[in-house]
Amino acid sequence: MDRLPRVSPHPLEPLFHPAAVAVVGVSKSPENPGNQYFRQLLAFPFQGPVYPVGKEEKEILGVPCYGSLAEIPGPVDYVISCVPNRQGMALVNDCILKKVRFLHLYTARLAETQLPEQIDLEREIAKKARAAGIRVIGPNCMGLYCPDVGLTFRFSFPREPGSIAFVSQSGGNAADLEYQGVGRGLRFSKIISFGNASDLNEVDFLDYLIDDPQTRIIAMYLEGVKGGRRLFDLFKRLDGEKPVILFKAGRTAAGSRAVVSHTASISGEEALWAAVCRQYGIVRVHSMWEMADALLAFQLLRPSGGRRVIVMGGGGGGSVAAADVCELEGFEVPPLPPEMREELKSLAPEVWSMISNPMDGSVMGGMGIMRRCYQMGIDWKGADIVIANSSALWLLDHPDGELFHRKGLDYLINLAGKAGKPMVIIVDSGDPLSSWRVEATRKARETCSLAGIPVYPDIQRASRALAHFTGYHRRRARRR
Image (cartoon, rainbow, N blue to C red; front, side, top):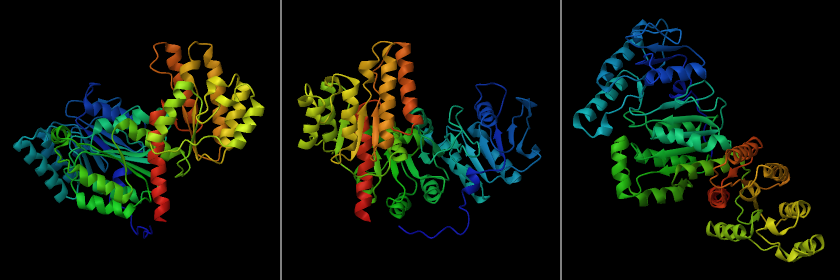
């Protein structure tokens, strides 16, 4: 798809790179939301002045606290509102006088309450702000995370930026994606929590992200949409140029009812969404862990539409289950060819007949044979993708087993670097009670993350992520 380069910056560019930020509704209480936003921006740190605004304090964390926006000596581009909803209109007036460009309303209990007076208040706040040229994010949302300038709404988010942008109607899910994936290597260019979307909505943000040079992959959590036709037009405009991974909530009657009370949205017809995703190559997921798993593959793996999988490692029962799971996700698990079986016969004459695809590591009788077999599996041209099981579930039965597990994992990581094809690693230690086992598992997953290799807790999740990944690339190859 050819797109003309944008002649001028996108209107939302200053939103993600403001020169100065003010947090309104700050007190000294660490439980105060304004205090939390202010502390987080100082800690990251935000690359510009951050002004706390609160009527009862003279200073916060050693920084002068202002009684109103008007008292701030310099210009302010971006305001974070942590005031009660009844103060919303007055704050908009203050923003107009201060010539603020963007207002984030963490402020909630408006249209999502479904009360007529609160619906009207939200509408009037957005209307007055927009008439004055102020764009509003929210209300009822967490706002922006943009690590390259130090904007954040959670202290634990990583400081280093990545290539994934996440547009989320839910503030909780905006944070949940980070929790699900950062420990395994996910990094973000931007996370946007936009809540009730009284003004700026999913279409505005997607329009920006299409041409954002920092964003290579787009993820979205939507409950309802404000501009459905425009959204579908943007999907058509993208048409696979940047992967879009979508979690569309409200698929059932109960889910649709919950959507209304969460972000005051109408969820829409499930059949329509399914058809649109098929038509425009949108990757559809149905949970936050499934989204994180898919994003991990898209971020770290080289493009591949291959269907043939070789599975290496794990025990006998696990190998049978792995074969079933892979085929149920649309992959082929081809048998090893005769010439490879002859080579195995000379390599391991006592066990060769039990070595197949999946390769059951428990029958190989030693690390030396196992490594030779795995190298053959990596080199085999009959497989497009490799799923390797580190056998953590078995090896981490005793603290001494961590050394053996680490050596095996290092070998797999070395193989992945030479594979010439997509490879993922499974580190599954179950649901351990022992602190040493928990820590060994964490370290193993961190090792994979640092090596840039997708790591999954089980074969089901690995296979599902790879199915999303390869399906997208097969479609893209057909369209070329």
